[in-house]
Amino acid sequence: MPQKAIAIYLPGLHGGGIERVSLNLAEMWQKNDDVQVTLVVNQLVGALTSQIPESVKVFELGARRSLTAFPGLARYLSANTPDVLLCGHDHNGIIAIWARAIASSRTRLAICHHAPLSTHSKKVRHWQYRIMPFLARLFIRFADYHFAVSKGVANDIAAITQLPIEAFQVIHNPVVPSDVATKSAQVCAHPWLQHENKSDVVNKSDVVMGVGRLMPEKDFPTLLRAFGHMRKLRKGRLIILGEGAERSSLMALAAELGISADIDFLGFQDNPFRYLAKADLFVLSSAWEGFGNVLVEAMSCGTPVISTDCPFGPREILVDGKFGTLVPVGDDQALASAMEAMLEQPTPANVLKDRAADFDIETIAAQYLKHLLPER
Image (tube, rainbow, N blue to C red; front, side, top):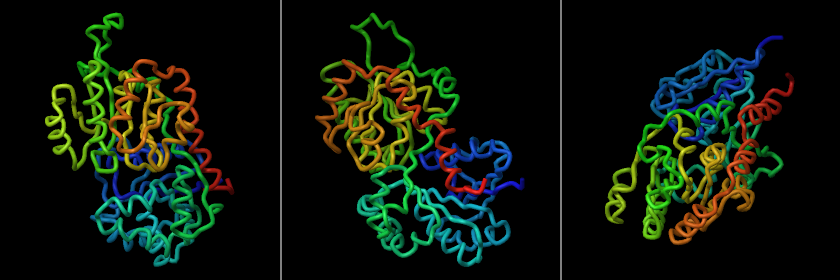
């Protein structure tokens, strides 16, 4: 049987959730003898370039930005004609639609919608995000497949594009790798995460963790303020993994709140599981999400979680609060109270791990293939 070709189109391989998800899918699909996966990128840059699976091909368009990438993408589609091109960003999906039209390609086009466009376009100041709802309404309908990572995102994109909700297939993100136990057990040298004497309650400091790009949508200021409130009641430390434009302002806020000595910004980490597994609590403080991959990552380690009830993924992941506390967006007092309560009475690790298993990479990757390559 001839191989089926799937191409995944991304701007680059920076350390975001969409890029991680795309690499997870690529790795799992490539394990099928009858499938060849190619990563098509504007530029082969970013923290995740070292994690490209072996035998997955890479095609670099050499474009500095997506807006100028469509001629190169059109040439790629004309010369290679993969069976399916999957786009993980909405703006990349629109570029791919233009490129396919120019190339007169028979490639089937799939867009995986990861973010609520209605919120994103209002909150992010860059002009390309402001015009995305308009462009989506004009062009998104020309894709052959529409996937959404949560029901909320599906409803949001359907409302903007005026496509029927039946046009969207909701498939949650593939987050939990088969070797999660190995990754969780890897040595973590950070002094705050060394195994302490659990009976030494007097000297124990609870370690709270946040993970994500240091950008406005992640609303780390609310987490810092909540941690400041919590620290007045109990010993605690806060570790944040991730890089972004707000790093300096967050460090300044930590100094203003008097918590600098008990907070550490560790930057991007290619294996967050080894940190999450050793934390006492994970907190997602986002103003909005499409899904919330890191919630599942923390749960897969058995680490208790708290999240803002933001649009859209956390409520679906936590099943209306069954597997972790949901608090109002931006409410640092409510978040602090929830943190204190969860540290006092954490969700059992086995319960969290069982729920996280619903998002294992192998299962989700198979769901995608069923839709993308029904002829297999």
